[in-house]
Length: 401
Image 1: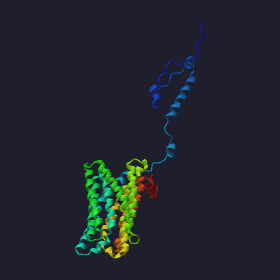
Image 2 (image 1 turned 135 degrees about the vertical axis):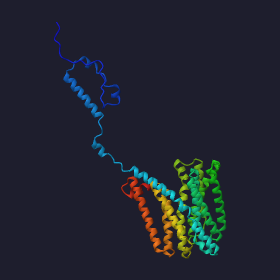
Image 3 (image 1 turned 90 degrees about the vertical axis):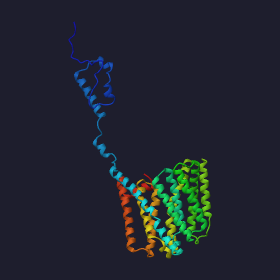
Image 4 (image 1 turned 135 degrees about the horizontal axis):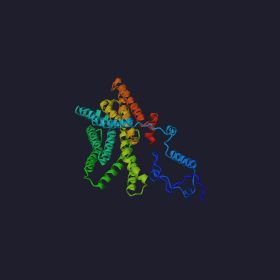
C-alpha cells in the first residue's frame, strides 16, 4: 500500500534561463547554472524556493547596480571647459599667424632711415645700430630657417627667409658706413649665401642627407661659438678684446657633436645636443636687445639713429607669439618671445623716451598696451586650461604639468 503523497516541488534537471532586462554579460548569455544533484534529489518547499529566488535576484541587483550618487559627487571634477579650450587654441594660432606681418616689416623703417643717412653722408648715425646685435639676429634667423625647412613649414620658411634677407641688408649698410669691419662682413656674406642655398635645396628634397647633417652640425657649432664671443665683444673696451671665449665654446661644441655622431653619448646626451641649435637661436635673439641697449648707454647721442617704429614692430610681433607659446607650454618659444618683446621692443622704446626721442604719451600708451596684453594672455590661458590662478599656468609652463 502506498503512502500518502506529500506536497513538494521537485526542481527540473535543467533550469530555464533567467531572462531579466537588467542582466548582461555571462548571465544573460548562459542563464543561471544548473542546480547541483543534491538540490535535484532533495525536495524543497515553496517557501524555501521563494527565499532562494529572492536571494538570487538581490545578488544580481547588487552586482549590476548603478554607481551611487554620493560616489559621483565625491569624484574629481573636470575643470577644463572643452569649448573655451578650443576657442583659445584657435585664437592663439591666429595671433601667431598675424605676427608674420610686423616681422615682415620689422627692418623696413631701419633700412629706409639708414639709406637716408648714407645718402646725406651722415655715416655716424649708423653707428647707433650695433653690428654684433644684427649678426646675432641673422644667425638666429638662419638657425630657425633650417629648423622650419626640415619640417617643411612653408609659411615659417618664408618669414625666416625674409628675416635673413632684411637683416643682411642692414648689415650691408653698416659695412658701407664702415661700422662693421670688412672681414667680418665677408665671412657673414659667405655664411648667408651657403645657408640660403642649402636650406632651399633641402626644402625641395634636392640635398643629400649627409650634407644636411653636416650643415646642422655646422650651425650648432657655429652658433655656440659665436654666442659667447658676441657676448664678450659687446663689452669691449671695458674688458680685454679676445677671441678666447669663442674658441673655447666652439671647441666644446665640436667635441659634443662628434661624440653624439659616434654614439658615445647616452640617449639623453644625444637629445640635449640635438636641442642646442634651437636654444642657441633663441639666445642669439635674446642678446640683440642687450647689445642695442648697451650701445644706447655708451652713445646716447646716437639714439636718434634708431627707428621707434622698428622697436614697436619688434614688440608687437614677439608679443603676438606669447599667447601661443604659453598655450602649448613651449618654454623655449615663450622665453625668446617674452624677452624680445620686453627688451628689444619696450626696453629700447624706454631708452628713447628717456633721451626725448619719443613723446611721453606714446611711451605710456605703449606700456599700458603691453601690460594689458600680457594680463589678457594669462587670464584667458588660465580659463582655457581650467586652472585656479595665472600662477598655475606659469608653473605648468616652466616645470611642466
